[in-house]
Length: 143
Image (cartoon, rainbow, N blue to C red; front, side, top):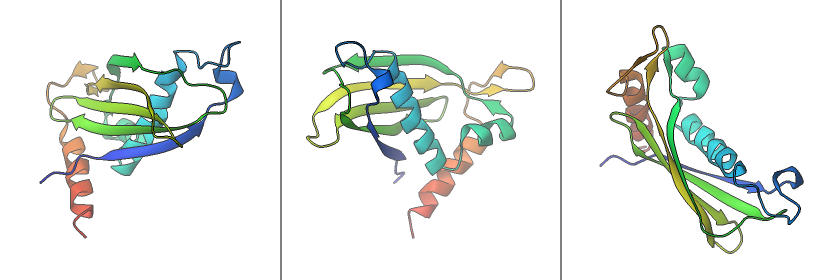
């Protein structure tokens, strides 16, 4: 059975992310997703630098966010990222919770596709390097 990689990161909402009402501006949620996504990619040893070295770029082509409850200044949040698709694209699901109460505030997902950097050609299947990284990750869990 293949274990889907997941990651969790905790963040305290900084002052520069909030408006005059101490509520997080909606655009910063993308940043929180990105922070968790980078932790997830690092976990499978396929960071953005590794992608570049392997000859592929993985631009985000779709982003969906559902705002359930607002985030506020100095709130401690947990952002979870979980890989849900990888064969033809990378789809990562996200959930933002209050780190203390566990209450869900936001959920969403991003979709990324592989582009061959040498010619910017869209890849209709995930490159073998991604599959190798995911297989190595799964093997490392068997220990």
